[in-house]
Image: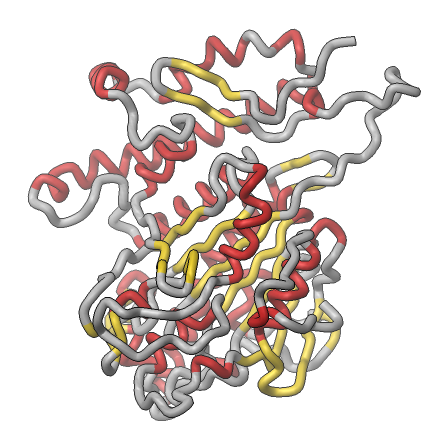
Length: 448
């Protein structure tokens, strides 16, 4: 019998190493029935946490009734085709984002607390302190089986020192992942650097010779590795060959989009304005980051990721959708109908990008299902109404099926201030991650 293909097989070529998606050839046939179809294989769990800042216009976010998502509110309309793949959770709160005697600084506390469940120390010096974030609790366990324990992605880098919010260090409002209570994990925002990290066998960068050759002849990394791919043909069935071809085409398409951004930004890079690989279009930037997250899950390069659409307190404007004003200023709406309308446009823009990511996960076949079937994706923020800096009734969307652990397609309503950390405790449990050493994730959320 032909030995199964290793799950860690890489397509190698001149400075590159391209991980493969799961193929049927990687699963051995049952010894008692080698001619029969392999038994269903349980796919590994994936966890992703996606953050949006400054709160949400909650009336256009919250479904009208508890129960099945038969009718979606305006902001969630881009997710209509995915209504059976996500739930809205109303009533969850994060009490450690409240002042609790520390005064102003809700934006900094919101981001620092969203995944840690701990009160951030109010300081703008080097003595920062928050807590271990949920993604890193998961990464400590699930990351033992992948090339990267976790990926931290975001459209904004942000400052890591100085004061950004009422005496809080800038690191709080720009960091969602914390490896320890004093070790924040910076995000990567350049798609080109992320791509190279994923597809160069963990090297920090392409060799000088390989880069020079590729730049000279405009070669894709796939051009170095396709010969190696042909050597797999005798090990793959028709379905696997089709899947591999689709996957490599997807990798090439993403690489070309990143390369286009790199060419377009080359002059800006020379003047120090923007790193190469970041598109001028914010929507395209978010979609490239989402595509790279999907590829990381698809190749089992990691099973844990965070993606920050914008840092907390972001003043980004959205002229492409008719919102030239800054997001943060609009979030202090004072019940102005015009500001509400513009906030809804921003919220819906973000949901458009989420819909793109979820559709890409759902389109990525894996075993008898797809990546969304095995994933658990939390989308939301640690502020409800931006005008009130509310941390007690947060906008939380939970997508994916968690390998059967989740029952999406519903609006679940909990008592106000129900701990958000209890949701995380349930997700970690579903992923097989022990939480005994992490008191901040005590409890489980029922009904998800």
